[in-house]
Image: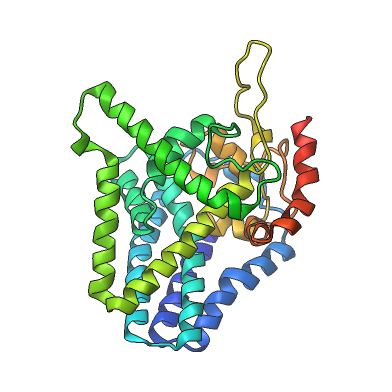
Length: 339
């Protein structure tokens, strides 16, 4: 747990200092989220031994998730306030948005993802509101009800098809998740006979409107613009994570006409230790799909499924350039398609 705490909490004071003081602190925050994480991954490529993951109870994991959730909202307020007050110039503001967007899009997203899988209502609500603060509340419904059920099939908007570039994938995945999540939640309300006012999408949309209003109150017009830019970049990080972790992997249909069960070969894993800790073991993605409620410190690497050639953040960066991405990944995905 010490590694998870260090990796995920260290950027909070760095980005807070970047928001308050600007200047060199913006560069330091950016370096931590990019070059520093990549360098540590290269120095120690393979994750720590699996024996440490065989514990069944991790009480500190929930504590860290709550601390990260509180820090997430405080950091958003600091960044929006800083942009509104014009603490940094145009270049500094851009750097702050990039550093903050990387953090909330990678660490904040990973934490919210962990929380929405929790059985505890308060923890689940915290994850939901983290997504709402990123104007992405519908992911709370779509991820659990659609993605986990239909992953690695054409019915899952979050699964990228072989040969599909990220910039084509992103609008399809965003709109598809919103639409399918809404339909699934509506059907669930109909089954239990509850009114539309209990629809989670009412909370998602009203919450998003409230977040926009708070951004204006904290930072005025410039703060609102900065907030929109920050959450847009964070959403790109979230979409990149889904894109990379399932690219080109599809479940086959059995002789009985049914889909094969979700298995290790339907998710791309990454064994890199530091970015794994930074993203709360999200790169151990196959085990998460096999055991969605398993706490992040207990997620394992089975070694049977496909493995990314570089860390998840590095591959997400590569995915921004579709020709280069396809050159690296298509032949690897095809091997698993015929496995």
